[in-house]
Picture 1 (cartoon, helix red, strand yellow):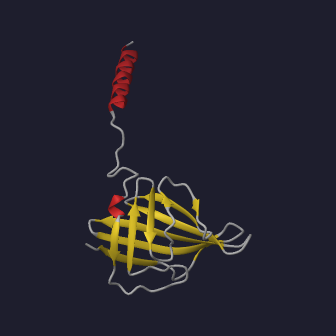
Picture 2 (tube, rainbow, N blue to C red):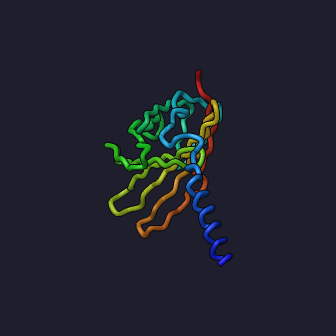
Picture 3 (tube, helix red, strand yellow):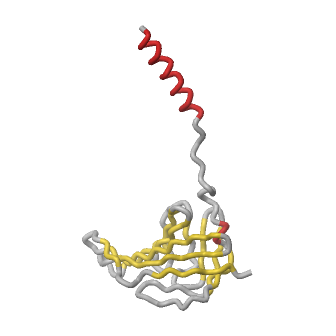
Length: 162
């Protein structure tokens, strides 16, 4: 009888504790990319590798639903921040994904019908007035294998232009 009573008390305490656990909160709402907005410049010497072209000066525009980046290899067509894939008139398929403390912007281009797909992923992370872009190229072969392109990874640090 005592065991049954103790079990009931412990069960009631655990149930009450579960109801009081606050929801998990992130450091920023998932739709707040305003820290990316602005003009950015780098003094680094940027190597141009196959499929990865970073530019010295870029402008990023954000809304609650999209991110646009210009100039550069990535046209100013939007990346939708809800994760949906968009396709521009240039044939690029674009998607955005919240990753840790940044956002990954990915473009996909199929080289030929039924052929391999070039996948460029740029991870954008902002801390104050510093933007770091980690960019690399992979290729999805028709058989489903993913190939990392050696030497295509490039990391560049930008400073906000005031």
